[in-house]
Image (tube, rainbow, N blue to C red; front, side, top):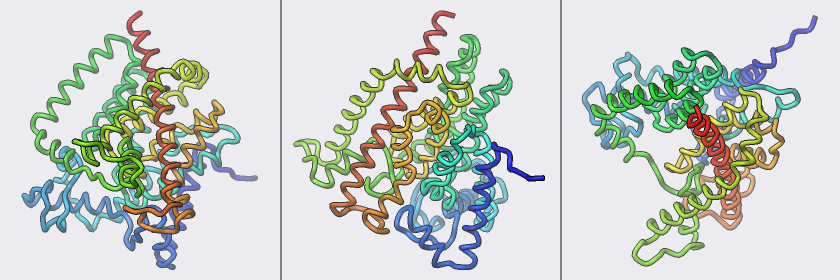
Length: 408
């Protein structure tokens, strides 16, 4: 009698095996582990889960009365750049020694979340290639909070297929994640699927919750937003600003009089975003027909991931591990046969490997050579292409649902 892992658990099982191999590599051959961790951003990392370590350390400092949004000796001269609502969990007796247990918990949350991705016949390995890409490894190795947010958001999207109480619980998860990381607020676009009365009730409740959080935490929220790092576009990042900023830094785009280099990059990035959104509006009809052909599960995942990626891309410069939110697009795009778009997404998910192949393992910081500059340009074009396509499907979804609400 043969034993087979159920299809829904194969991604999780494969990931658990990979986690065991990486742990063995760390324990038995540290140079190999250091090389593996260098692939993402050119920096070797002797100890895993450093992002979680920094969060727990900030919690300890905050309990001691330290202003964690200003450089302090307690944080080694650094600052806390997460939402202040997260600090309210600092009453839990957690400290930096809990980093290992917390990091493994984050890894488990990611692997369990993969159980919620539909694995269609013949599409397992393409999906696995995305789920265990260099971007995903970067997120897991750092134990970045995005890993836990990713799992909770997928759970919330899964709940949208249930009855109203389950959907409300899903909106609650989105709101809780937004309180910690801001960008999951994009997932509330799924509320457009509700009846008008439910949508109005959700809007009222959201306003009350938003004000309840914003009023007492406003100064901390402003400090967190101001502390979000933004720098070189050539190092493991994505976002609206990266292409224009890189063109200015490379001398491909001259600074405009009166604006300077930074102002020129900002203006150019917004002009490019406006053009991309215009193309997205033109392509909404094709996406409306495509979304109608998808099963509800894959359609929800595609719309949710598109909304999150679009908001992240427009709002700020993001570290590439946040591209794990592109993973839920893959089942739907593979079913639709959008192979070109899937290839663009894979280029983004595996960008670090391509960068290392072209230029060698390097921090890739401020002055890339000709080969790396060319690769960076290709990466940026892929990022804008993916953003434009996903903005088009988001527009198609919103147009369909708002039209239904107006008629009903």
